[in-house]
Image (cartoon, rainbow, N blue to C red):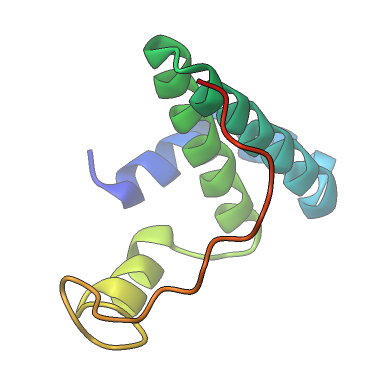
Length: 106
């Protein structure tokens, strides 16, 4: 399934409900799913990680649809020819240091 097909499937399932909820509240649900993915990554539970990745993609698709954005088209436009900054594949940009924060759980 292509990204555009997935986005259309999510629209068929949830667009009416998501439209009633509105973009702001839908973004809050998306942010909550990203938090759940973060927890799943820290815990190292493969089944839960896979589920949360799928949920994040579904909520991102919903947000894109609410804003009239075709995810596949914009992804290809922005990343289809390589890194948007340096044009390289792989990226040749110099990485910034990661922000300080709590160490991931092992």
